[in-house]
Structure formats: C-alpha cells, structure tokens
Image (cartoon, rainbow, N blue to C red):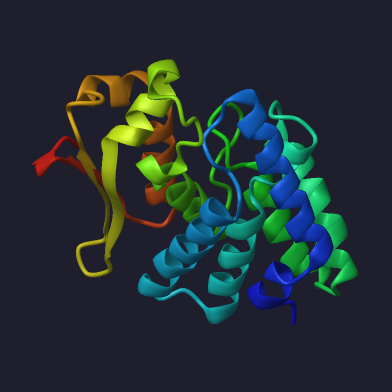
Length: 219
C-alpha cells in the first residue's frame, strides 16, 4: 500500500511541491509548500478518523491533502485539475491501486471553490483542512507595507483550528484574528466562498459547519 510516508519521501513529488511554492512566492501568493501540505494532510486525516471512517479513507485523505496543491507547478489557474493528473502519475508509479487513485484524483480535482464540489468523504476532508489553514505563518511577503488583503488577513490570523465533535456531528473552525492587521469583515470579504464550500463539505460528512472568530460564533 502507498503510504503518506512514501509520498513525502518521494523525490519527484517533493520537488514538484517545492517548485510550485517557489513559483507562487514569486507571484506574491501565500505559502503553498511543505508546511501547508503537511498541515492539510494531518487535519484531513484527523477529521475522518474522529468521525469513525475506515483507516483506508483516513490514509487517502492524508495523501490527497498532502498533494492537493501540486498543480501550482503548472499554473495557478485550474491547479486542482492539473494537480489531479500530476498526482495520478506519481501515485501510479508508486503502485497505488486504481480504486484509491480515483478517490484521490477526485478529491484533488475538487478542492477549489471556483469549480469544485465535495464529491466524497475524502474530498470533503481535504476541503475543510485546506480552507481552514489561515495563519500568519503562511505569509511569504516580508514587506508589510506591500501586503495585499490576503496577506493582511492571513497575517492577522494568529490561531486557526478545526474541531470535530462526533457526538453532536459538528465541525467547527475556530479563528483568532488580530484586529490591528485585519478585521473580521476583511476575512469575509475574501473568504466567503470558502466558508460556503466548507459548509457543503461538512454536510457531505453528515455534520453541521460552525464558525467561531475571536470567541464569537458566527454560523
């Protein structure tokens, strides 16, 4: 079986992720490299594990989460689609069965809000983990005077955590936002479509989505 460990230690896949992040940094985007990949992998797997999904689903969610942004190597636009194909080539080379490949490709290909839909539990977990990763450690621009709104909102987020309650069937995103750098309104200004997708992903998992910012429940 192909494991997350084997994916992380694969020279080709790691080079693609690193190179994609270098390109995005050049374009002024937030971090999409190994830190983000590792966090999404961990959280996506934890979500399904907490909800009692099978070990295979948990493992596939971790792998899909780690590889979900690899398509940025090709271009930012439609990177979910190119990422699905790049992942197919790498995972097939590592010996992943077709059935598992299909789930991972569907999850990666559907993780962006512009055209994606949470089509499976694995896909839903990746969406939730990806969209929840809002944090100042992702800001790659070293010049605060040159921050755009995405930089400011990410820099303002000092804490971001997904909480899953398997008894109440809720999935809650808890954020702490430093108002000295961005307002809650700024957050919704750029991330509203992401919140809608997170709600849909939670519903795919049979859960209610909740959002808590600075201790106040907003949905």
